[in-house]
Length: 297
Image (cartoon, rainbow, N blue to C red; front, side):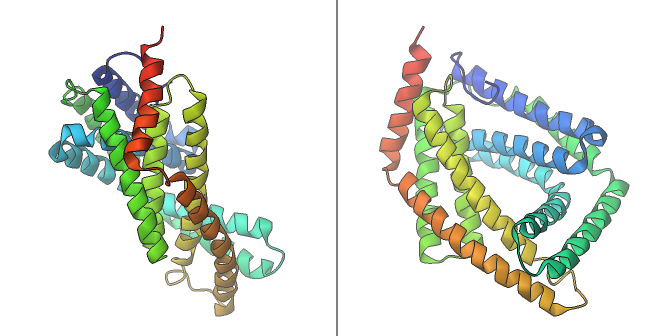
């Protein structure tokens, strides 16, 4: 239950969860050579996302000054790993396309080779600036700040307000994406969906079945939107990665367009269903389950 609020005081649990997640990210940086950069970066960034989701949950009670300070610091730390993350994701995405493609294999192989070459360049560049040491130092500083988080007055109502706010923002992001289906709007929707998913995980108690089922649906939706984002990001490499034959990128664009059309339709349908409840009703439902569990023997 490392990323779940247990039955102790809310202030104690918020600090414990934050500290545990940050320590997980720090461990990834300190064991980078053993784990490999792709796994270490992915896991470290995931730990940081969990902490950022946690502070969004308590933002209404804590105020903007606290949130903006901590969120900006954690975002900057994550950004140190962005180029490595992006390069790895592009390689993994083209590998998935190759595995499921029945045509244009030669074109995709050319692009795969180019993405691998770019990944190696990024790894070579990062090896000279000791980025993981800077990330580790940032996380250590963040761990030290947790004890000073002013969370003493947090109550269940604080979490209720935070979840309602997150759900409302997800609904707003969905409405925006439905009106104007751009990569940026879909990416914003994905981030807001992940916030709700992380909040549900925090409030899942001892794997409460009602909340677990919802958490899985939000996770599935976030994964679908994440795959769509990865496809969009792969295409951004076109300008910086010229190939001998321009038709190779054209073939990739056509293949990606077909995949994205289907996945986006499915994602928007699921998002519309999951975000149908009113924010207050959704927050009340989840917090009622959590408080009932919390007060049980």
